[in-house]
Amino acid sequence: MTDQMTRDEELIGRADVNDLDAILSVPNPYVDGVIHTVKDNADAMFTWDYEKGARPALDKLYEKAKKAQWNGQTDLDWSIEVDQEKLAMASVASAPVSNLDLTGTCFESWTDTDWAKLNIEFQNWTLSQFMHGEQGALLCTAKIVETVPWIDAKYYAATQVMDEARHVEVFAKYLDEKLSGHYPMNTHLGMLLDDIIADSRWDMTYLGMQIMVEGLALAAFGFIHQLTEEPLLKQLLRYVMSDEARHVAFGVLSLKEYYAELSDKELRERQEFAFEAAVRMRDRLLQQEVWERVGVPVKEAIELTKLTPESQMFNIMLFSKIVPNCKKLGLLDASNGWLRRRFEEIGVIQFEDWVDTGDEYEAFALENTPPNPLAGAESA
Ligand SMILES: [Fe+2]
Ligand SMILES: [Fe+2]
Image (cartoon, rainbow, N blue to C red; front, side, top):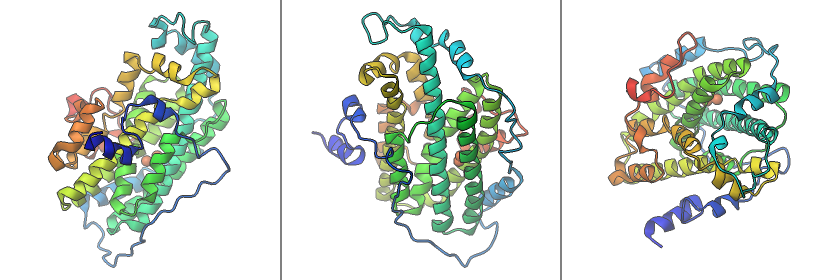
């Protein structure tokens, strides 16, 4: 094995990051019981420097966040009726799999109704993972309030805690009232959230959550917001995105200052953590629990459907916020370009010159038309 493979074994738990059998064989520890406990290993820090606005960019975010609060119960129109089956049926005709020859595969006898049922499961799964991820953000941001040494960051993080409570609330309500079933936490998303919470270093919470998890969520919400025909989901995502852009900007603006002081060795640890996060999020996008639930051979189903050019393109686009933000933090090129090479390997480096969220977040405010998620290159 090469040194890199040995290191990947330590970081990711497998020597070959693309080993599908290894990805699918990780057991899911999140299905038993109602409570899952993680040690958060961190020192809570008081600061006696109360000077508000010592970090003007964070102070500006805090002032914006105070004015941008909304109420998930009353600002969204929950009277809208959602016909999930009809929406799922409508999306079957345009699905990329309709161009595939499925003769001799596990899908050979599938009808449009079977594909529509699959779409329903995908939607239940996707919204469930958003909900679990939002709870991860809630816990991480509460941790940041305790652990970050700067008063402006504590103030801002406190507003984000409220934002995340609201996000968990609205996704849970949408799942319960408008969709048709929940899924447990995905194994790979859960492993990532556990690692983020367990890390003792305060900046790693930001890197894992604000830069990686929320960077991916911001891109995903942007695409689904643009594509969905369902007015309540569209409205819900629009509201959530307006907060989420601020959260990612909070990560970029805080870490930009801190990472400027770190050594190459310390930056390399951050690069490795960012790469681990990227791989875990890519693994989660295989949606293995859905295939298990609909009862088809998981590996065969993934190889047939997830490897279509359309599906791969969508998954790559989800990195369109993460990569420019990592570049802004100096993480691509530190340590002889270690993270740049890894992002090249997983096929996402092309976004490096897209606009970063520290520059873009104000465009997501509710009074504006949100940026086109495919147009990051033009606004860079
Ligand atoms: Fe959120
Ligand atoms: Fe967030």
